[in-house]
Length: 276
Image 1 (cartoon, rainbow, N blue to C red):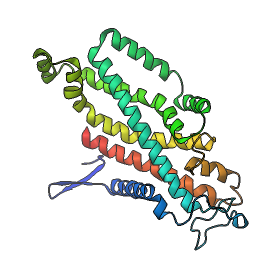
Image 2 (tube, one colour):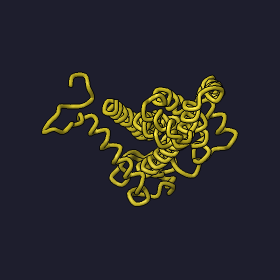
Image 3 (cartoon, rainbow, N blue to C red):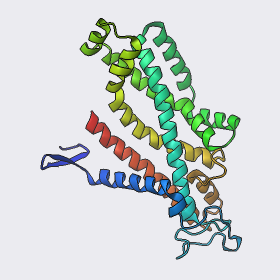
Image 4 (cartoon, rainbow, N blue to C red):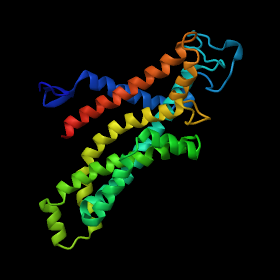
């Protein structure tokens, strides 16, 4: 299929492109590292060796050491746990809230839809990352507060997507038949309409994961992220102080962040082509 993100069809099976396989493999490996970070990390991420600060890569410390002599590889692995945890939690919370709002406003219509859309317009009037920075500054830095801050505007895009899908689905024959036999609005929304928006939600979620991870890194870079656990954004901020003296402090978390975001986008493109 020319121009598609799917490769050729072989033996009746659709074979993904090498890029999709590489992206998916990278994300699986990243998830394994994050899940088993306490056992995979070669050193304690908080252990300091001040005399060895800013040392470059070595057989004992493959990615070098930071200004306090902490192992960069171990901190990078634990940072993957923070990034994925924040990304997944933010997307799940945003998807749940956005789906509920989109189902209700799209199906009920009328003044409910009008009020819901005006609320969405208010949220869209503010840049999302600035709202997250302001909210995190008020709540204070921390893992849970970052998730809350990112979800505070993340649900809006999910709500708009679900509402648009519901507007096209609510006039389908099976929905009209359910309404005719006396099904309640709640049953129609969650039993008949919700499954119809599952596909677009999955695609939206894959792209939103990349955005949430990037936003978390931005907040951590500004010092508003988790304080007790290493994060890629925090590592980038620390490495910026020694960019000329110890570039290994910046390129490892930066490369990890770039590869993760690209991988989620590649997988998202592939899912969009499969589901559409």
